[in-house]
Length: 229
Image (cartoon, rainbow, N blue to C red; front, side):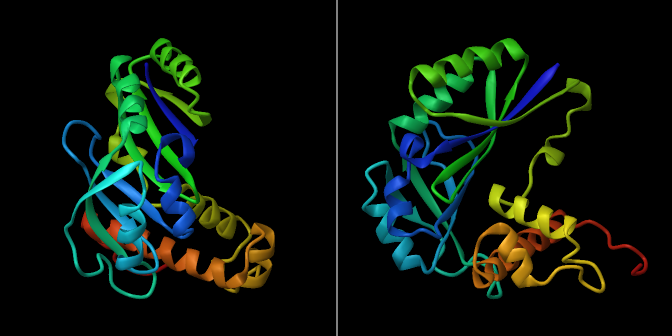
């Protein structure tokens, strides 16, 4: 049985804590493995200059290059740029632990001062071995979900989502409370109260979530349905 592990790690243990201190709205998504070659990383924040300065001052990462001078997405919902970043020893050790126990990193995102990662293992024994080393090196891992599936049935595309953990939780609660119903069953202010954030912050989070979902849908080039319900 193949095992997929979803977990969270504080940025102070894995990297980018200084950047989050400087730019609380900072988010990033790593494209590919973190190894000998500096990976491509999509980052977002208030503006490129602020994000780049914060990254340059962060001792846990080195900015190799900023590969996009313009925003990666259109509209007011998100501002993203593509960087090539060289990560420090903490995250490289983490990946070494995973790979040495027959594991692989499916995705790595950071937001709200937290890293959210998805790891793929051949079996539960490898998961246990990795977790023991995570504890030994004080990564303060919080496992949020473990899923087992037959290797033949594994669909990697279904394991990934363009949403951050916070965005996913927000969209899920909004759907469950009827925010997207017609007519709406809950107002923006009521939903914000449930999430214990301001309605302005919620509005921005929903716009970012919508942009990520729409961009993913258009990138996948799925055929549209024939008619609206």
